[in-house]
Image (cartoon, rainbow, N blue to C red; front, side, top):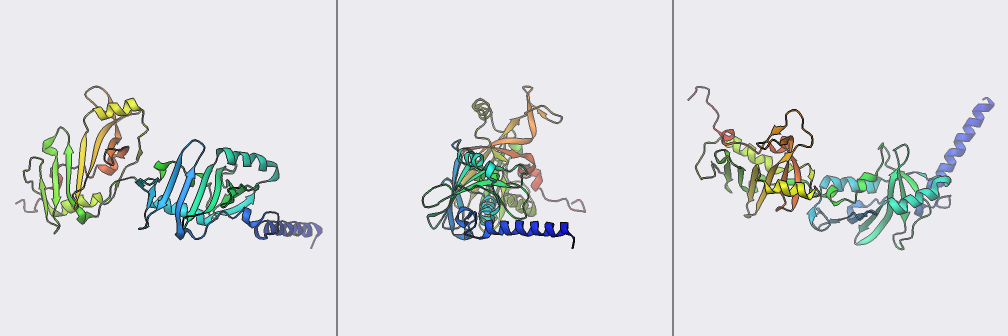
Length: 347
């Protein structure tokens, strides 16, 4: 074995030993309590609080039935909650922040990070600050704090999730809208009693589908006239309401633009009534095109409308949202959609 190879092996062994001491020895350079970010028992987590310095904050709370709410008011997205809890569980230290960068990174974490508090059994179990990504965009700066005293650690770390190539900041968004469920309609089909689709200005194209508790169906126009239908088509139509979601919230749209849109008549109104008698109404409005492009629809006043999206009022009129024609087009049908299929013999 030549001399250079011996030196190389020695360097590798020393480096490995150093990393092991830092990451695994409580008596090493970095104590375990300073890097204990992960929380393994996520099944007991009942609240997560997220906040940044701009005033955005979100409290995610687990309900007795296992569902989650956002700020005590809105249903949370199950996929987003699962993703967060997996992150909390899988957090891993990639490396401590180097001595030269430590002071600067700590300042950045304290002044411009996202505060994360994790509770289980009503007690604060983890408190840490989530910063920006590392220069290679494969790690995230984080700083732990003592859950009992709130005292910040003096050791920031570069955190990762093993096997994931990216940074983690976006998983801790303090924006409530990022956590809210974006379902406009979400029904167990047998619970639907009626669906009314109004195409404003076109009463002959509007209709009402009804379903009885024993799964008998009816189709009529808005004047009450019975219309022909194929049962399979009605069932397929009702199945679309298992989950119909919107793209995003538009509550913060410029007030003058929003008021102008809401002052105009809606293009469509969809109303679903369930077995308890509760109605869920969505009013849909044409969305002015952000920039005129090929295919945009011209209105009578010369303006142009987005061919892919519409605005809508949902959640009892509390939320102004963006919906896609691609998603909602399947429920914006006309009566002929339900018509009986033509027999092969033409009779």
